[in-house]
Length: 157
Image (cartoon, rainbow, N blue to C red; front, side, top):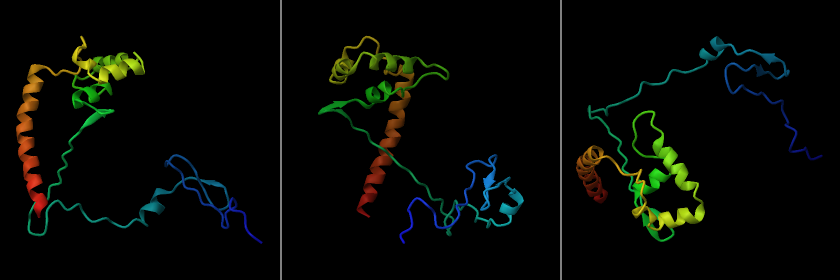
């Protein structure tokens, strides 16, 4: 006899997805979770180590470089991010998201034209940063360039 693959060979014990739901035991009766029973079975975890044995602090850094394309046309990352709703605004200001939605509502043909260079002549350049923000971005880019050059230099090791 070949058992059905839809019938479990042993009774299922289902656990709740949240503590507020009752657990179903083997006898299929609802039972509330008893946290004290669970706590005694947990093993203590070691404390998070922030330093190596010799006292050195270990840092983990990731640097991403983006190249956004529409077909063979390269799109500036600030354009690609802005039309997805990501751009710098004041807290609570949703104007960038509204502008991105209006741009996408023009339809696929209009969006393709925009991505192929139409952004250069667009009147509402909502993706442009204020001069203060752009100056800060440029200042930080200098430090980031030093970091990426240092990380690139480590590739030889």
